[in-house]
Image (cartoon, rainbow, N blue to C red):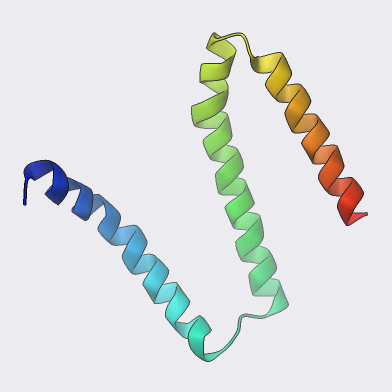
Length: 84
């Protein structure tokens, strides 16, 4: 195994192991509504953090930020209209 592949394998080991450890109990007993809601909210927070930390600074540097904010706002309002 080359150094890059070994390094990638080490980096992926924790997320894969954590996913397996959390998913295993769900095969025997389905998570409740509160757990499912909590996991979904956590995932949404991670997604927003990635957007704010990785994507938006690049878009601001390229002067695309107003279009992105408009699209985000329209999407946000659309989701709430559907959930309404």
